[in-house]
Image 1 (spheres, rainbow, N blue to C red):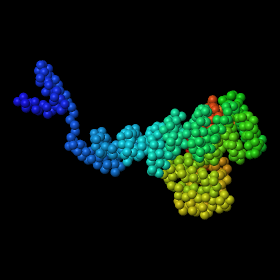
Image 2 (cartoon, rainbow, N blue to C red):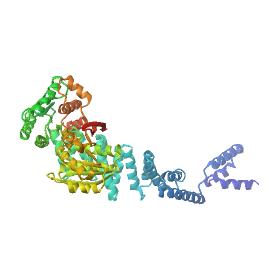
Image 3 (cartoon, rainbow, N blue to C red):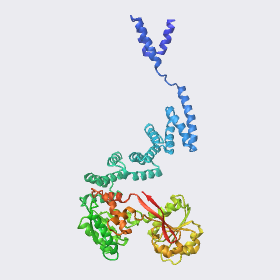
Image 4 (cartoon, rainbow, N blue to C red):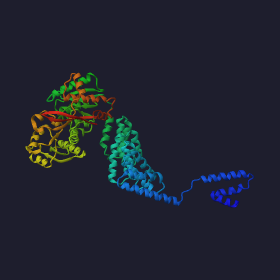
Length: 574
């Protein structure tokens, strides 16, 4: 009996314990020996049983069944039910073959269900546990896109950059690259430095270095900025940022800010009545010390050459930090060219032309004709239920840009542009063009043209069978001549304009004894916005101007009713 008991016991214990038990029998203290034996037996019984081949096989079969169920849902794009199956595998079947696939597809489902935090969790687990997986790069991209949707720009940039430098998928790489460039201006110096250190051996470091040096220049870190600009041009001699780098280096070398701003006004000549009125606005701000910088005025004499010479005097003789020029487009072009060459910011408070904003260091108050076109497109589509639009425009670049902005906004809002027709500006009749538009049966016609053209075109629109079509436009409609000369043919037309003078600005103008006019209001409100530019440096001045001028922009929608302009609504855009 004892022998049998002993045999069963040794079968349960590890091999190295058996000699020890044999010696126990020879000890003088049998009770103590027995206690040790019982203790050893208990410990042995507590050990987890190692899974057998049968256990592995059963788990693999169960996981395969669950995965097939989830994959079937996944193929039908039923991501919610697919995720339930994949989560079960991820949680309970980690040692099985379907685990890797379920982890990646689970991350994908989480992303599709907009559970971006969970998508990051699954995706990061996959990239760490399966660095050699065929899904590795896709998981990297998915994690980056999830961080992008969570507005975690540094993490998004990091993962998308890893994807960008390793992937061979040209479409995915291009999308990742565009994402990266969009996010770089939002990163801090510390974050850009980390990316630079991580990817300094890669070509994409060109972009990290530029944005790092640019931000250092803006924040007044001159030595660091110059070091990194030099490094950029040494490592990437053909960099796309060569011009920008040179410009920022020039900013740094301009020296300290003087606290002076130049103002160009047409005090004499053709536009002297406007200039003299604006001069009173300048004196009001100077007298009451409303600005953190001083204003210095020079006459443009309502002439483009004199305007450029005046800008040169302000920059060369007075060393102004920037220029404010409420002047005509005719005068503005020469001034833009000169200030651009001198790397001096220029503000054009009266301009609504997008072409000026395309020039570096030139700022308008926004609310361009292109923006107005987008606003009226969106309003007529959603608030008026118009679905089919046509566009008529003269064949020139300026109006073509406005027309294209309108058409793109129509398409973006899932409506249809059935015709876009151009004509020569000196055309006498538009019979052929308007009949072509009529054949497409539009509900509305956008007139991308100036005021005189609207007056001439509107009667022809009705004459050639489009009298029921709603006419749409921008602030070129906003002239008393349109309803007076266009008569019944412009009745019902709708158009967008920059917002009218708001009550606060009107009150301030009246309190200061200034004439309440559109020009005074635009100039006054521009100076009022610039009050926020304090303690600026040459390197960060352009960024501060941009921030002060381009906050929320307000547009007004008007309709011609009984020969009068009736405001329908104000629309704000950030």
